[in-house]
Length: 148
Image (cartoon, rainbow, N blue to C red; front, side, top):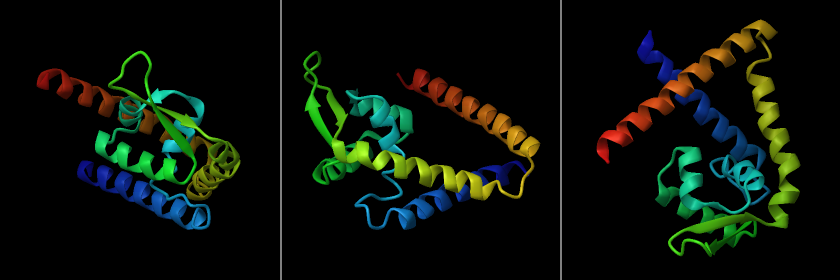
């Protein structure tokens, strides 16, 4: 049973990305890029490294996606004044304008996948997934501590 948990979580994640791809097909955004945007929107000046950590993806993926987002006018990147090695990311007006639609897409998917569940089931699932997420984060931190 335990090995199937990750299979289902991965499956939901992939379906969510594909759903966003379909919903965003005319916007110039991809389903993979969509999770980047609310974080950048809420945290102007966030560094690429901080974004990679928040999304739990490698830095090269962040660099690649940000280059595409910058090319399409959603973000700009600038060298940090305080640390020349860091690159900070800022939302542009195109991202600000896209946020209401992005929020709607995220909300619609969440509502649709839980529409056959009771409020109590949704609450219980949320609590359990938060526990799994927190433990996963702890494991990553423990692994990083042993590597350094």
